[in-house]
Length: 228
Ligand code: 3NM
Image (tube, rainbow, N blue to C red):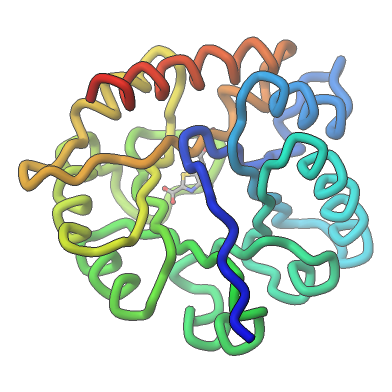
């Protein structure tokens, strides 16, 4: 029997980045406060963490996310996602292909893909992605970028490739409360597709007050969605 996919609100998508936490902040405390501030979706991204530790972090993070009814996705590691019952995975261009990920995961798993070009977006649509993470919108210190910054114009071009599809889109890369509205407005494609949300690491994780940081961003996305 096919189970329905979880309903996902992509508005404020927190991607974790433990190495960015301020000294005063514990990882789980920061996660919980960001959920209190209005994060609507969480991705656990651990690039240099051993499997056992990653699994434990993901399990505890899931318990916290469940308290707030917020879905949790795992970056790249299908085995971790399966091991702790995540709602889905986020995969990069050089990670496992979507079709293989789909064949391994439960039929209701949500799969998102990083897309840096219009071609990536078209391929992700063909491959059956549920959402695309498009960017980098702006430059960032959080990830060593392997493709050029696209800016709002580039985001708009990628959104156009989603017209007529059900695939959702979030933008990522250098998004902060100071440029979030510009990103949302500027990235509307001329054929009418809009971003479903913003994916953010440092503006929330590096803040000593992640609840306040998340509240600011959530308010901006809500305002945009009520009056695009
Ligand atoms: N992916 P911050 S940019 C994880 O462009 C990630 O594909 C990107 O971090 C991409 O919000 C990025 O701190 C890091 O700029 C985003």
